[in-house]
Amino acid sequence: MATGTAASRRLIVAITGATGAIYSVRLLETLRKLGGVETHLLISSAGWLNIQHELQLGKDNVHPLADVVHSVRDVGASIASGSFATEGMIVAPCSMRTLASGAHGLSDNLITRAAASC
Image (cartoon, rainbow, N blue to C red):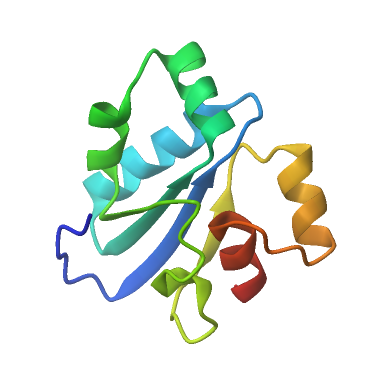
């Protein structure tokens, strides 16, 4: 879901199934306040469990913090392409599974595919 900001810089933010969902949520809140950065958000299913457990937040609270929210199953999304111009990608928290997948070049979901493209 895009809100159509005219930011000149883009950043991909992913939340996976490790403790510390607050880091990405606070990052998104801060970037929203500062402006000038178009954020693209990805949240794994285990990431959602952590957000709900650690922060007692739901999609209605987290999705509006990003400019674009992508499904982790959409490996054909714009951010999966090396031609997608971005400042980079932050995966916080990063589960060991996501870390291992990235280290070994496994692109089985949009989080790991976007990381490989970055």
